[in-house]
Figure (cartoon, protein in one colour):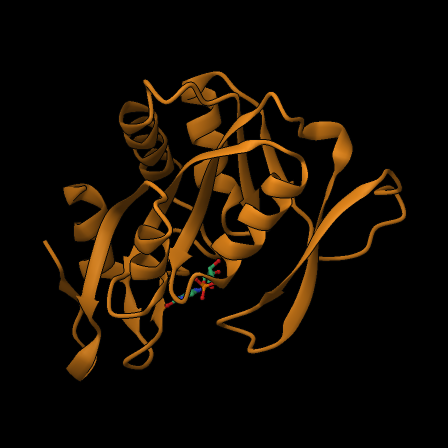
Length: 190
Ligand code: 5GP
């Protein structure tokens, strides 16, 4: 997606060979028009996939997930990272190792919102080692629902997540594929 790549080139900051900071338009300040385009692109790619629900993780997945849900006309569920007094229903839980915080945490979704009839599209901001995706796949599996595919805004193709999801047979659609962050430069895969 050229508009996204241009934004990454102009406003992304390479923090290390592993980490790209995109707080200017995705992870802190959000560019709504870009999010709308991202939602339209995911909706176009998954238009025939029979999606009934979108699942993401708070907080940074929510903006692209909501725009995609708006386009596809389906509800969006975000897995919660923090215990909440209002999240008292039966819970589907998984543990996830955070790439950016380097800590293990638990994420949870209420059983109320996912059922075995659902075909779920997972949306997230980044794909690195695939830990967040794996945790969401586990939660969707616990509900007896199907994973129809994964929509990733920025994939770092040099980390293992993409290859592992491909090997497991999941459909992954990434809007920007980063091949390398070496020498302070973002190099795209295609
Ligand atoms: P994974 O679970 O695939 O290892 O990492 C994905 C998660 O870690 C994403 O949800 C995202 O929040 C965070 N993440 C991974 N790599 C980056 C990165 O280079 N920059 C930022 N800002 N977040 C990242």
